[in-house]
Image (cartoon, rainbow, N blue to C red; front, top):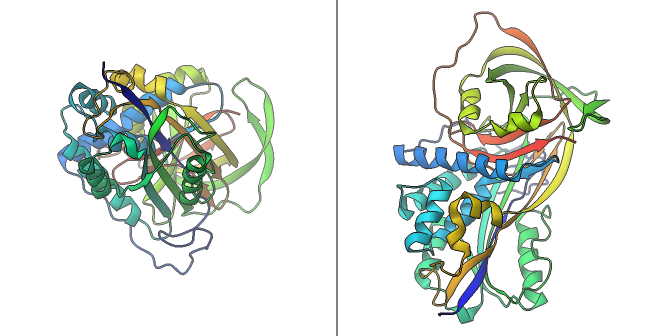
Length: 411
C-alpha cells in the first residue's frame, strides 16, 4: 500500500470594524475617500447557480454546528479554502468535494472563475468599506507540490506559497503571524503547536470592516436581553429608525446597510411563539432568499444590542457528514496537488465579530438571492423590531445576495 500523507485545510475567517476603505489603513476613518455608487455584480447563469449552491452550503454547515451558544462562521472563507484545495483533487475525491460544496455538474474551471470574479468584485465594491482576502499554501518540500497546482491557485486565488516544516515551532509562528497580519490582529493564531503529522496547510483569511449607512441614536441604554435559556442579562441596546421590513414563514427580518449599501447585515428573528432551535432547524437558503426579495417599506423602530465575540470550530466531521468523507480517508486522490499521496486531516475555522453603533467587524459569507418583485403596501406600517432575544444574523453583498457571514447571538 502506498504511503498516505496528511495535510490540513485551514479555513480562517476574520472581521473588520467601524469605518475604513478598501486598500487603506483600516484604522483610518476614511471620511475623505470619494464615494462610489452602488453597482450590482452581474453573474452568468452558471455563476448564479454556483452562488446559490454556495449559500446553501453555508446554511448546511451552520445547521450541523448549531448549539446553544453564540456562533459565527464564514461560508465564503470555508468555500474559498475548500475550492482551492479541490483543485488538487482528482476522480471521485474531486467529484465529492465539488458536490458537497454544491457544485455538482460544474467543473473546476467554472468554480475557479466564479470565485475569482466574486472576490475581485467584492474588493472593489465600496471604497468606504474594507474587504480583504488572502490565501496561502504552506508545504513540506519533500512532498513534491506540483507547479500546475500552485499555478492555478496563484492565478485564481492569488495564493502565496511558502516552504514549511510542521515539526518546528518556527513554522507555527510563521503561519500564526501571517494570520494575524492578514486579519489586522483579530485572529492572532490558527495553530497551537507543531504537528509532525502535517505536511501541508492551505489557509484563507478574510477581513471586513464597514460603517453603517445610517445613524443609530446617540443615547445607548442598558436593557434586558433574554438568553436562550430564558434568563435576563443587561446589554447596551442601540436604537435606530429603518424603512424596510420582511416577514416569511414565521421569521421577520430587517436589513442594515453599510457604506454605499453594497454590503448589508440582516437581523432575523423567529416568532416568539416558536422554540429558537426548532425555528433555526428549518431556516434555510430558500427562506432567507424569500425574506431578502420581499423586503417592503415600513417604519421600523429597531433595537439591537451591541455585541462582540470570537468563535472557534473544527469542521472535519461536519464536512464528512455532508459528503466529503473520501477526501479525509487514506483512499483520497490529491494527485493533482503533489507527488506524495495526500489526504485532508483537519479543517477548522476561527471567527471574530464586533457590532456597535459605528459599524461592524464581521466575517464574510457568499449568498445569491433571486430578484423578484417585492410586494409593497400602499401605506407603510409601523413595526417594532426588538432584538432583545436570540436572533440570527448574516452579512451579505446586496445585488447577488452572496452571504459573507452567518451567525447567531443567543447569550
